[in-house]
Amino acid sequence: MLKKLMLSTALSAVMATAAWAQTSTPPSSSAPAPATQAQDSAKPSASSGKMNFVSAQKPDQWLATKFKGTDVLGSDNQKIGDVSDILFDKTGKVEAFVISVGGFLGVGSKEIALAPSSFDVVPGQNGSADKLKLAATKDELKQAQNFARYEPPKATSTTGSGMGGTKPSSVPSARR
Image (cartoon, rainbow, N blue to C red; front, side, top):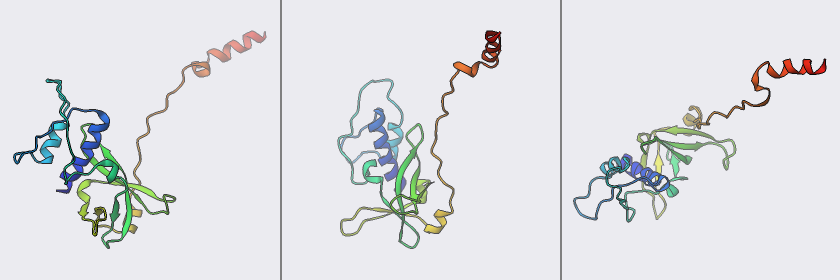
């Protein structure tokens, strides 16, 4: 159920920001499960050109804006971090939740990424927000490998002295 919930939430955010076509379902008892809806909506509609709108959030769906910052609990039910980002693939599938662990007010913290299947949802009590729980301790996560964000290669310049030996050979001839 967590996978369905997280996939629906993440996919909703991707669809809103990337303006991909989505399949909506009319409110009825025969509505497909969120996983089926997510699989259908991950494919852009090329044949009809018709836009399908999702009219409302369902109770078992999370918005990415609310999901970011969700507390993550360790195996001892103590807060060990929070969700700082969500990693998607190009089809909209959630690959990992990026968790900020350790530090104080973001200083000295590190980011790690874990697959959605690593988490259990803990319902909030007395009106508080739901939390995510891991079967790990804060110390174990501090020892985990850092998550490395992708950085595109920097553009290289081909003007000026990047032409090899052309410019230096012309300088001595100008001085003669």
